[in-house]
Image (cartoon, rainbow, N blue to C red):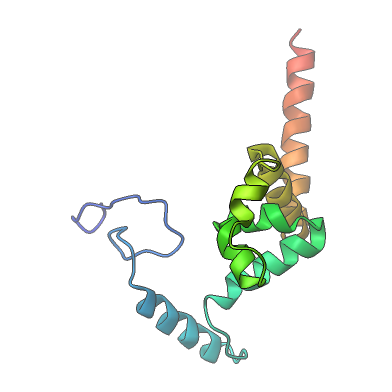
Length: 136
């Protein structure tokens, strides 16, 4: 509330100065300007989602969990792939993505993107373990 206006923390990646969501067109426009300013090739903002999905799948081989992380439904996936529109009914009986599996896929992706963060977290964790051990 530095400007005297309230800030609404909506846990958004991209937001207006008061924390409210930006319109999709504005995000795309700003992203395009950023690419031009840095002399980078043009891609759509949404293409970042596709890149992340492709990378997660290549690192883990887990097509189903990546789809779950992206919010895709089995029915939609089945239709996209030209398979049965009843894929969700059939597969739901046999497959349930656990939150731990989603965390595994996301952790693998983040480790690949930020290996130095893993080292920092591990070091901090190791220091805490040693302190706890020493205080016993």
